[in-house]
Image (cartoon, rainbow, N blue to C red; front, top):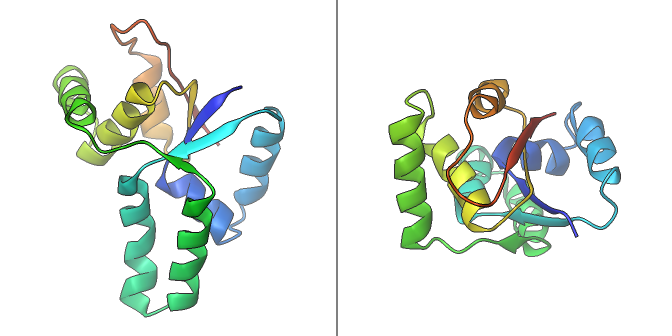
Length: 138
């Protein structure tokens, strides 16, 4: 089974049926046996705009979607890994470093993102862990 971590923007594409949702669906169809992972960080990022707008229908849609995924626990090891990534890759924002750390700690094979900068930065970096994570931009 392929373990795929979805970051916030990818989840937003899917839940809100944004134009890029079709690309995400097509990509995921290449992995029919995949398991979707994410984090409470992604939930936080996804909920800000609908809560600000008072769109509780969309808030509920996100909550339902997150219920279908496996969430990687927010343990100290995730934050330690994110700190190491930020120390090595200074161009990574804190949220991007955390998404990558969640995927690494959760032993995901792929991190699916809509952030080209994150994918490009990662392609120049190879973590010193035994697990290889590939970051793909859709």
